Image 1 (cartoon, rainbow, N blue to C red):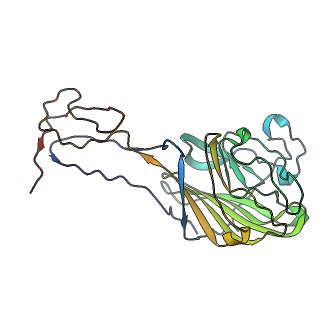
Image 2: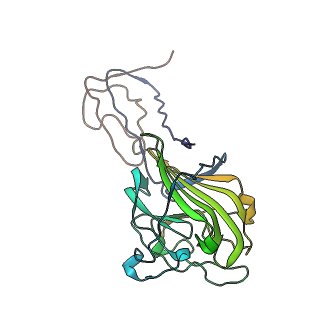
Image 3: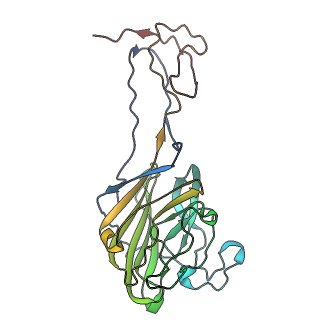
Length: 289
């Protein structure tokens, strides 16, 4: 079944005085000064991936500059896959992406790299955010996941729903970790059309090696975030929502005494100084009852 967008930000404007005729106010979604996305918890709502397409990894052929040819499937990436709609990640629109086997979706970035830094146990993992080669990526879990190890586990994807509320769903289904046949990971990323939210979901897991993979996203080395958690088992049957921060590019209180169509007469009270003028004879009046 489709997963409805769990959070769609809305704008609310409050005017101190009434405004008649026609006046246009604009507010847009965009990055805050610190992080592009905020995060929160939402109800777990797993999308059944059983009918979704099995991802075909490239044997390293699609990795950056062909530097990882013959990569094992635990450190591999797919060719570009159509999302099925335009998804804005970090302020840039994308219509396709690549799935990297170690829990990542990547936009205009074909970096692969090894999945394990030290075998442990517990193992440690390389390329923690921030890392320049992982700009424009999101990571549902940064372990050394190995689709197909011992004949088990697949990564599946599909575009579901109807415009303008489609979802692109990627699921790691019963995937093991490299060098651990007793491990089990069921992970899911959902991208939402229009709102440009994305969700990470965690189902049945058996983290036998007790590694602690990173969870989060990176637009750039100065704009990234991670999700803190305890043992990986605590994530079972939970979901994390990531949603764009909102910024108002202009703040009009509409509290001038009068307007006459002059330039800059409608004052932007925010820091950007985007003053405007009344249009089509718009006037103000005392709004008190």
